[in-house]
Image 1: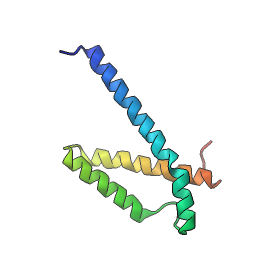
Image 2: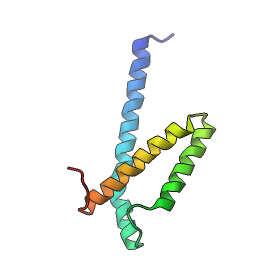
Image 3: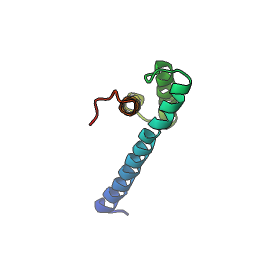
Length: 95
């Protein structure tokens, strides 16, 4: 049987992994921006955003997670990526 301290340490480790994955995902913005420039695609690509949100929702259903919450998280991730691409293009509001 685990103690609350052990469980919290495990959660802390998972949280750290999530943050590392977010960092990795946002780090893809430069590659995405480069590809979008070559293919003349706007930074905000609503059709791709829908694909990402649908994929996240499908996975949430498979894992019996709250679909609305997962879609909200992915909306934030999409926004972070758009903002990073805008920043790289010199258009962003980020510091």
